[in-house]
Length: 138
Image 1 (cartoon, rainbow, N blue to C red):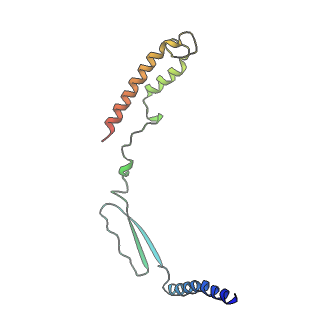
Image 2: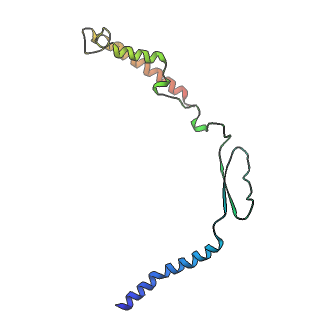
């Protein structure tokens, strides 16, 4: 039983001894003294290291440092700030018309008369938006 324990302890210590030997050989070389990161634009070439203790890491930055990357150019905006002022005014008027004639509202005496008109207006607006989206597809 004791022999088995000693054998197991010796087997467990072997990787640690190998790691110590490997680490002591790497300590002699040491890490590089200088690492330089360079971002290249257009046709620029990666600079050469100035000494043996220097590592130069180069990355391609695209066409120009002053250009917006292609994936972010000309993206259509569908947020509220990108809508026309007239659309915003119409929406505010529709909200404030509750109960008035042609408002399509269950509140008030003439609210029910505008439901058909509102459905036609919504269909027309959706058709215009679909045409605009189809025109924006390259």
